[in-house]
Length: 441
Image (cartoon, rainbow, N blue to C red; front, side, top):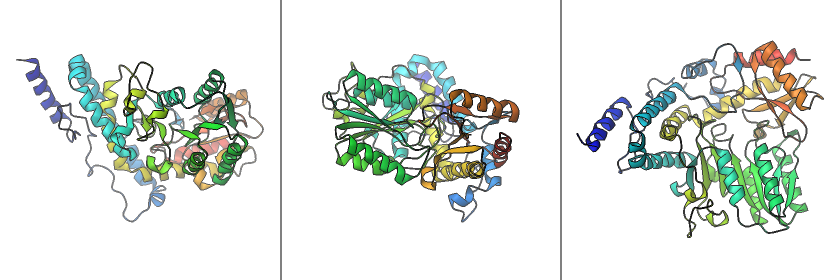
């Protein structure tokens, strides 16, 4: 039997094993493993309930939680690192891993590019972008680093801007860019608690003080405390002043329900292994059509007509199975609904943050109004802002109360503890955190 015949038989069998496979291209390619779940098996959405009303329906979310494997012995409120795959997505990933491990280079060299395009199309559609505006990467860090390093419109004495709430690695890269190009580095320091207008005012103040600004890094949702920035408004003002914007959406897609066009940015980096629920090691780079000329191709790549977003990265060998599983992850995310996820996560944040704000020994950080708060949040003991203070607090929460969190650094106001629930987190889990907070004084 020829290799092609063998491949045909295997592909036919895989399609049988992975019912509901996604393949929208005419070109031959491997079938994607779709979630092994039908709409009938998914918990029914109560009729007439808005996402905000559904957010507090513990019986519904308990049924959703059944689609995730549950860790025992700890209340894990540190889901901002990466997201747990739902069981159907995990099963699709295992199937794809088995297939790639069996067929190896025969599959990778003959069929992977077609399947990668299917996954790219899926991501682009979910983001509200064009296919030629998106390339898959390993993570948002790779995407953002490439944008910063390869931006080509800076001259000596120009200024670049970032804020204290940005991801520490990105701040370091912006500082490196300034030092290597004889540029002025401007750091905006946002209040520990801020609303949309206060945030906007801080950016406008910086724009006014530094008319030589050419490039800024703008975070959609801060990794430290979940603060949401008014990205579209800030970007609109920046564009009027000739300032280009790189947007960090590492934490926002899936935590918030939005379309990339709503942000009014030319470039953005995303993680799909956080709130979208893909396997670890998948991100995306968005470059609005017509914006490529300002970002050079990756060193060694060529794109003389500035039409190829894929020329801006060079990831080499990737985890093929992770890429193949993207459609399954997006399908499960869509089945639950982005608006429903956002509302549930905001609800869980409010459960603990609203009570914590009443405790005289607790300082809650991040948004001070509803528009500025996401499902992520942070706190610290009043007056305890050092790294040692935060580490001790994290250990107390874990060892004395069985609640796992993480220390975050980089805020100008000091270190803090980040609290990050997921859609499978229950109100009872949040109650355990509240018991801990009350007893920390």
